[in-house]
Amino acid sequence: MLNIVVCVSGGGTNLQAVMDAIETGKITDTRIKRVISNNRNAYALTRAAQKQIDAVCVSPRDFETREQFHEALLQAVDEVKPDLVVLAGFLVVIPQEMIRRYRNRIINIHPSLIPSFCGTGYYGLKVHEAALARGVKVTGATVHFVDEGTDTGPILLQKAVEVQEGDTPKILQQRVMEQAEWLILPQAIDMIAKGEVKIGEGA
Image (cartoon, rainbow, N blue to C red; front, side, top):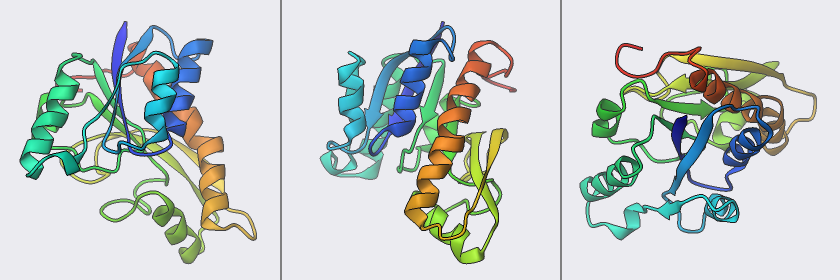
């Protein structure tokens, strides 16, 4: 059984896609041990609670220093001893200690075809605004392992999505979620659960 922690900051649509895929058997032999959000008002926490999944908020606002927040975040992860940490729209920089402790056991979903429109400052709608401003004809999403850089870890899966005439950032964001993110994030977790992708040290 692959035990996972899912970290989210907002609505939790990727979390929902993962929960649905576990329920329908598209993700095999996997359970969500905990959902963690940095945002007390994140609808993702409600989604988790509705499925009786342990859900906690660890917010930087509740701590005097970033170090204290990082310690609390790491503790919230460590408590459930996950095999894999899934960043599903988590808009917080992961502490270095967490990357070290969970080396090659943290994956992230990013709403572009890395190396395009990624790195510091590229998140959420900003990614799609940049893609439209550049005039690209194809965008998409990427699942990658997390390392010390921003969106620089090894790529696991990518899926392309066409940009259409008249797209706004919001319309494009929705299409990328529906046609790429909600498909390849569950697929990546299932590949790891089946042992098709090795995780852990030296992966």
